[in-house]
Each structure stands twice: as structure tokens, then as C-alpha cells.
Image 1 (spheres, helix red, strand yellow):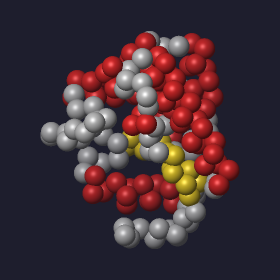
Image 2 (spheres, helix red, strand yellow):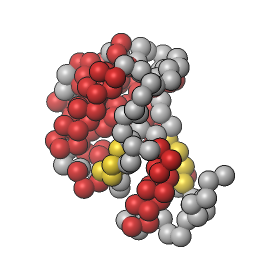
Image 3 (cartoon, one colour):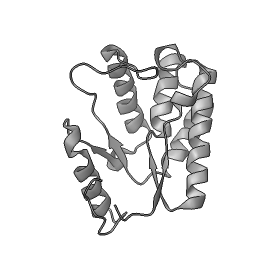
Image 4 (cartoon, rainbow, N blue to C red):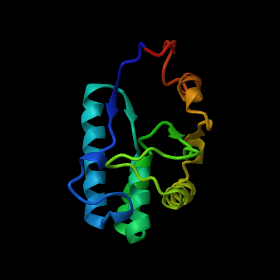
Length: 161
């Protein structure tokens, strides 16, 4: 799309620990450490990093499983300052196709979403959050428009390959 960027991919799929409903403190700490590592390494390669997940998402799973961790909460809040924009992807309507890593339980997804919403308020990052439309077909256009509006990218082409 004509933008110099790097991607920090979701790390939970690589975790040697249980994930989703079965996650543990150790498992979420591993995922958070892997996320930080990806973001730090990507920052050496380019100025624009696209993260499949943010530390906020990962911390929400930890809070659901183990409760808030005050010693970590402050660090997460500080790390949130490094993000320019957070795109909120709504829970997919209808049946979710499962795989070996994806959580398909609607109640579990809704609980995570509730925690994410609470953390957004607690960390004071509401102005960074852009809520994407329900239709995934409109996501790329909405994302590119927001990145342009915020001056993060200029003139990037929006055709999908």
C-alpha cells in the first residue's frame, strides 16, 4: 500500500502455555513479553508498526484469569502511551470458525470485551480508540482514512492486492 511499516503479530498462537479460557499468569506474562519484544524489534526496522494485538488486549486476558496486577498495571499504562491509535474490532456476529487457537465462546469473548472497555477508560486512552464497523469488508478503508486523518500515513494507496 506504499507505506513503510512492520507487523508485530499476535503471539498467543506461539505460546507454550495454555491460552484463552485456560490461560495462566505465566502464560499471559509470556505473551506480554513476546508482544513487547516484537514491538521493540519492529521499532528498530521502521517508524510505523502495525500490531495484531496490543498489550491492552493481552492484559485483559490476564485480568480475566488472574485479576489486575498492580505491579504490571502501571507498566501497561505507560506502554499504552506508545500507541498512536487503537482499532477496536467488534466481536464477529454469527458462528465463529474455530481453529487450534481461536476462542469461540461468545460469553468468553464478551467478558474480554468488557474488560478491554474498562481498561480503555482506566488508562485514559479513549481518544486513541477507533471503533471499526461490524462489516469486516469496511475495515481497511476505515483504518486508512483514520491513519491519514491523524497524519500517520500520507497518500497511501488503498487497493488490496
